[in-house]
Amino acid sequence: MDAYDLSTIVIVGLLLFVWLLPFIIILSSNRTRGREKLAWILGVIFISWFAWIFYLLLAPVSRQNARVDQQPSEA
Image (cartoon, rainbow, N blue to C red; front, side, top):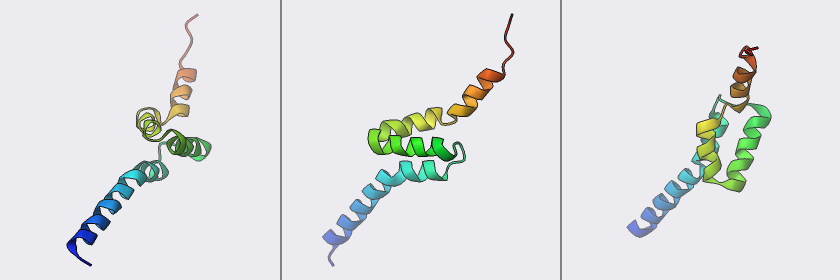
């Protein structure tokens, strides 16, 4: 194995890691659970990196809705 083969393996390995990074972060995160986590994973699969960016910005969707529901209404 020469240096060219080794550098190719390293580059491919890094690219694979970068491609898998959104999945690793979502699966290991405590911000979502169950079906919501599955929805984010499917979003990353079908919509790619845009879904991962939205995950980082909006992940606890159900908690945000719960906070809005708990606010007293002004009447």
